[in-house]
Amino acid sequence: MSRIPLLACAAEFGLLLSATGLLAAQAQTMSRIGNVTGNADAGKREYRRYCVGCHGPAGDGLGENAQWIDPKPRDFTAAVFKCRSTPTGSLPTDEDLFHSVSRGVVTTNMPSWEPLTRQARANVVAYIKTFSSRWATQGPGTPITIPAETPANIESILRGRDVFQKMECWKCHGPAGHGDGPAASTLTDSKDNPIRPYNFSTGSRFKCGETNADVYRIFMTGLDGTPMPSFADLMQPNDAWDLVHFLRTLQPLQTPEAAIWQTWLPAHAKELKPLGPDQGGR
Image 1 (spheres, rainbow, N blue to C red):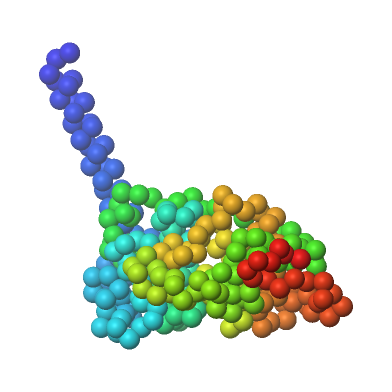
Image 2 (cartoon, rainbow, N blue to C red; image 1 turned 30 degrees about the vertical axis):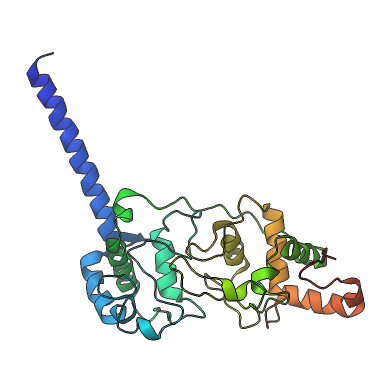
């Protein structure tokens, strides 16, 4: 083969690499939320106005307010996120980050930024992605599939109670779901900061949403950076839905599951074994 075709092939390969690098760079400095495209340059302005005090100029979670905040602000340079629709260890989608910015994170100092326009929030998401090279070298994970919810009835709630016992959820969350299990005081996040398990009795929202599907998603993706693992390899979908239905009875809400439980419990309370160590479920 002559040198000319070889040089031509090399040139084409170089162009391909350049194009690939350009696409990766664009993916890192842009976000796509439905029909809205976020731009990192514009997002930098919003970030410096609303986010820098906690998350810091470098996005490392070391803003001037961070010393007074517990739990600590997210370190965007690590690109590890709790709230995702994608499998554990993978990057979230742009929509995942957008939902976190919009919704806020309950039981933390991260508020809802719904007052900002969709465009402004999409711009902030694009800028957040510039703090870690992971966005340029890896794409987001593929969102997990959430199957149709199973019927919420007393049988499902009781099975979910058994799952809560069997999976030892009580060790962190406590037998009554108050976040006071025997392991609670020992837990730390991925940066060795103390972290508290979720207390189901405190309100209607979870860190990553408020619907039954949101709770199911937490079981199957885990909360990266925290001791809460993914149960995707340990729990069948029906078991996960049963656990969702049981956890709904622990909240101070008149959910359909709570109504079923409150109707059934008075006549059957003596049949139930307490949850916790050395117990065998029902």
